[in-house]
Image (tube, rainbow, N blue to C red; front, side, top):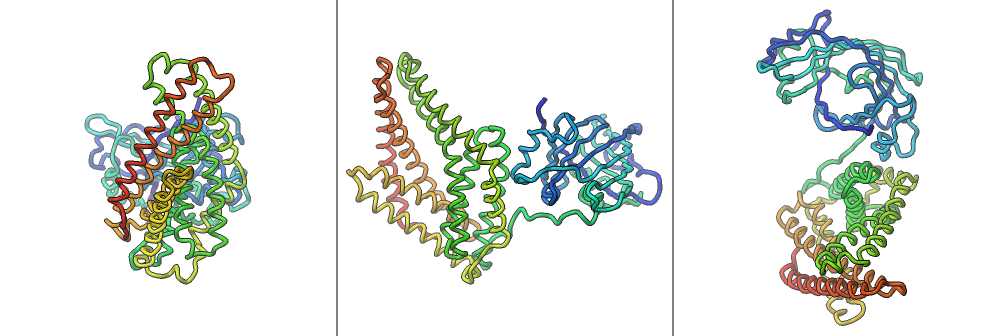
Length: 503
């Protein structure tokens, strides 16, 4: 049985001093409160030695009793909501691999071990509406907590909770008068585990940055953008480990975006720190690029093959192409998985978060964002202009494809630079981002055609090629040549329209 995901939306309350519970049917919309249902729950919570999960609002437990025994990993999913990933009980002290993968980018090689044991006597009341719909559950919990690392004394408390079932978030507001009348107040603790660990509970780890402002420091443009990309890296990491579609591409894109913006704004920060981050991001992007490029090439070439005559499309060429590209993809993907388990990768994540939270900024990074950022973005635009002139000179030479590829890379850097200042420069930045993205896409198609053509030439030259297959490869080569030519024409047309755009 594999892990399954669900979303829970709930609020916790500290009850009043009396032994009773709120008048639940006084809550607007609640027609009936079901009979009390009692159960006993035993849960052991796990975390790293430095409570990395807790610091990010995550909890991992193994719980017995109740209607859903098993391993539960809870991740933040917005106000009052958390995503819960449930896995079967399995063995104690053996966290399921599928849950470990979900938090590997957070734990970063650190071991998980028990931090607390909670025993809960739970009484649940199902709350139903006029049509019998199950709106929510009200639970009255008596909790006994035992920290397991000598971090504090045992404790016990009473806690109320409302968990939505089919009701919307407005139910919490509707329930407020009934709860207040019973002496309840919103819980001062984020979770039962937070209350159990008391003073050992870690400070919340930053997951974002201050938004950049026109009159704020230009460094906020960079740290804000980098912070967004760090969140993307952490969000895509579990999917890459599971082999989810498009996650390798999205993770690679986040690494590239980060590197690109660091390079654009490099003069604002310590040179060695930024150079080190760029180098490691390039390493990660290159490794993720191997399976991604093979995936793109496979889709592209096989789609072109399907446009040929049925006999050609289903002949020996298809098997050879699938074998070649599948082998490349599988080798690249396995290398990527190994990389995501490496200390080098985890050190990179640590270094990126240090940069986001405490950037090694120079004095000029404090300059006002509007004017300072425009200078860096426009410099990236000038760099693209220079690459275009070099490509124009290289036409009709063997280096033309390489020159166009450089234009594409510089267009991508400009696109990312423009993205970083969308809130600062508005429409001008959006227009620049849109144009550079279009150039990047057109020349990306050109570069893919060049790479595909080289691959097809190599396969066509193999000494053991099947009879008739060389002709199929030649047809595919001609298709890629036409694609490359059309991309060149489209680029030149777009370039005339885009010349001189700045923020």
